[in-house]
Image 1 (cartoon, rainbow, N blue to C red):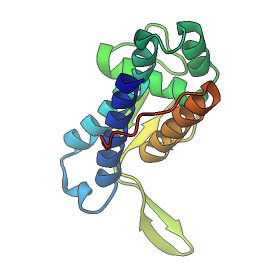
Image 2: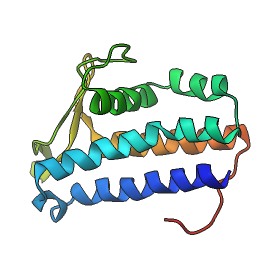
Image 3: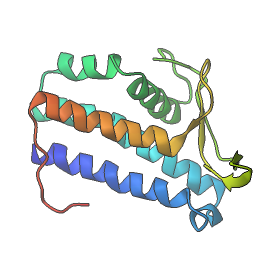
Image 4: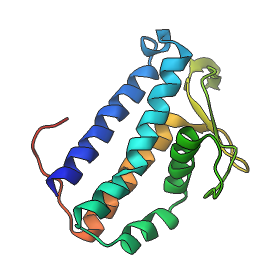
Length: 158
């Protein structure tokens, strides 16, 4: 499980970068950098499944079943595959999934608040805040590990 933990902690480090680009300071980064961080997070997040399978910790059908049963993870898969292969020939949700780095301003209680800089556009869904989607994917992986009785190694890789 050590190698699986290593990949999970890598995902958490990419999540921290994604969180940083959602702040005022991070918004000073180029939109290319922001987009790269979003795609890299979701590529690493989705491919945790391969680390689990290749480690022999769980069988492929168990891990694939987890992905198939979870909308957030299917969106994660489409972001991963779309960014790696240009075209998605067998999409989970949307073959035209896209990341948008345009800043949106949301009015909260009459005050304009700078919300997210990275949005995920999925056909049939409202625009998704990339950071919130990333948080959900991390949460689902933790729940999956817990349900499977798997413990992450605590070797301070974060």
